[in-house]
Length: 182
Length: 156
Length: 116
Image (tube, rainbow over all chains, first blue to last red; front, side, top):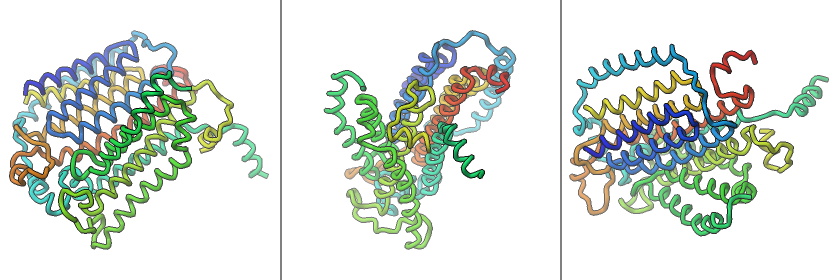
C-alpha cells in the first residue's frame, strides 16, 4: 500500500510541474512522466493489459504533443495571468473537494471490491466463451457492442483530423467553380 | 534523409523483433495479456520508427497512403461483418463458432478474428493521423513539392 | 479513503489547468491529466487486496481465480477509455495547429480579441 501512495505522490508532483512551469517543452515532458508512472501503477493494481496499452499510447501522445510545441518559435510563455479565472476556479475547486470528500465517506473501503456482475464473469468466463483472458472475453464477447462504438470513435477522429488539416487549393477551387457555373 | 548511421543500423536489426512482438500480442490476445488495441498500437510505433530513422520516402514505400485508406475502411467493415454474422447463431454479435479446446490458439469463437480486424483498423488509422499531423501540418516550409502522395493528401 | 482523495486531487488539478490557463497547449495538457485521473479512479475501485490479475493459466484452478482475482469489469471499460482519450487528444492538437496557422499565436485571449 505504501507503493501506491508513493507513486500517486510522484504523479501529483509531476502534474504540478507540468501545470506551473513556463517552458513548453518541460511541461510536455512532465506529462510524459505522469503517464509512465500511471502505467507502473496499473501494473501494481493487477491490470497488465492496461499497463501495456497505457505505455504505447503515452508514447504516441508525447510524439504528437512535441510536434505541436516545436512549431512555436519561442517556447516560453509570458507571465501575465488572468486573476479572476485563477481565484474563482480555486474557490470552486476547493468547495468541490470538500463536498466530494463527504461523498467518498459512503464508499466501500479501498481493497474490498463489490464485484456483483464480475463474479458471474469470473466464474463462467472460460466455460461460456473459451477465452482464458477474462478481460478480452469481456470486451469481445460479453460487451462487444462497446468495442464497436470504440472502433467508430477512432474512425471518426481520423476523419476529423484529415478534414481539419485539409487545404483546398485556391486555383483549383476557383477553376472548378467557374466550370460548373457556366 | 533521416538520422545518423548508428540509428539506421540499430533500426534494421531491431525492427523485425518489434513487429514480431506486436503480432504475438495480437494473436495471443485471448490466452495471455494483450488484445487488439495494444498490439495494433505497438505495430504503429514500429512504422513510426521506420519513418523517423529513414525519412518519409522509405516509410511510404513500406506502407502507402492509398493502401492505408483502404485498410482502415476494410478493418472497420470486417469488424461489422463479424458482428452481423452473429445472426447465424440467432442474435447480434453472438459468438457462434464452436469454442474449441481451452488454452489453444484456435479457440474462443471469433475472438482472434475480431482482434486481427481491430488491429488492422488501428494500424492504418493511427499511421494516417501521424502522417497528416506531423508532415503536413501546414507549418512545414516545403511548399510546392510534387510527390504523388503529397498531391493525394492535398486533394483529400 | 486517502487514496481516493489523492486521485480526486489529481482530477481537480487537471480541471484547474483547463480553466485557468490561457495557453492552448496548457489546456490540452489539462485534458490529458483529467483523462489519467479518471482512468486511475476506475481501476482503483476494482482493486482487491492480495489480488491476482484476471487471467487463467494452465496450472491454475478456477477456484483461485474466482476468489482472489481483481475486478475485471473496470479494466475492460478503461481499456476502451484510453484509446478514446487518444482520439480526442489528436483532434484537439489538429485544431490547435490550425488556429496557430491562422492567428500566429496560441494565446486564447488574443484569439478571442482579433476580428479574423
